[in-house]
Length: 510
Image (cartoon, rainbow, N blue to C red; front, side, top):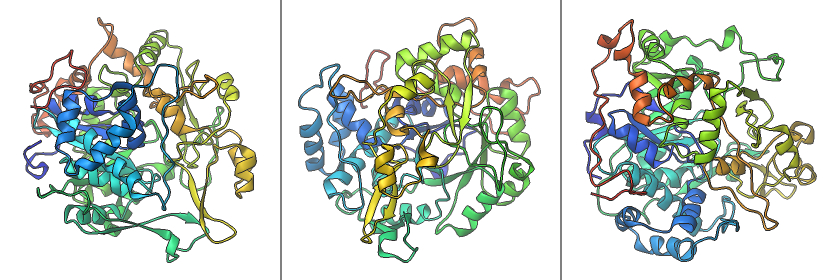
């Protein structure tokens, strides 16, 4: 895991989007990083992902080698004892983790730190490329622990969106220097100076004697207004921005001000939502444009607007190295060949209240019949809302839980009628679906950008495609308009990944 410091490497022209849950896994990030671009792992729900992988696959040579580098062996032993000693039988439930709260015992955060460390460390195996981690500002409680594990593993970039994370540069700095970090905690009904409105995290129990590399921080924003606010108000340096357009997959920022809906119930964006890239560029740090980037010409257009390059998610989501459940991934590619897929922007699907892109794939939560058949349940809890109850204590509710329970907790049931459980749906999409005691298997929920049908160009003369095929296709040097001279040439030939072969499921640490 000894690599050239990220500060000494020129910014890449391509950032592979940090798609959760575990779509942007360590295999995908490693493939992109080894090709000279920025590979990104998703840190969303990483503790549950790690625990379920252990139950399914146990520990192989590569994972064991990474675990041996974690500075606190007792944490590793505890995790393996809980989740890896006995394999889960197919068709039986996973052992579940208790939902995180501000009162969770340190053991719960130990697992978050370890899981984040492992994901980044595996992504960095065998090459000297750049690896980042993507976290959601809306997922608050595990943030500091996730950052701690990633920094310990030598992560090069931290990417955060779904909010305005002005506090994160300071938290990263605290972790790198072994200081206790304080983070704001959004609790409905509590003022910002209320004791419940902050979280603390002490990294010292996890840190070894090796000095920590300070990663770059890149904010993911939807407008030049948010970029300017984050740049000016953050408690430390902001090293760049990804500016996402509404065509991007996953969560989108809502339109500014009052807005109308289209015929499918999606938000209509207007002139107030147009991005002034001159303003973003005037901040003096690199920026990348995300959303609707599916060709080398799109990359050239972004560079012509002053961007360092682009962020791309959807095309990588369907490549061989993606963490998407293989049968689901191939089924969607077949449907794309028949031009039978559409993407809807739902203003109600996510409990966060943000618009969320849903692929209308039969057999998934995007299928109305499947959605109607699912019993409402919230048992992972990453997107729960914290609030003060009648006794003034911090409690939790989720618009995806049973409506009677949500109402009892003070939630607005009218707004929650068509909310779905993103946590369980996205966990199923990456092949880690929970099996209920009655045999019911949680269905997948697939999200993609608006231009999902453009993925089909990567299947010309081939049945499947790799992350490297995506990079080759997007490389601005291949654009007929040829603006390649505007960027520093970067080889797209993958570096040899030392000790890793195609038939080694987890790879071998060099």
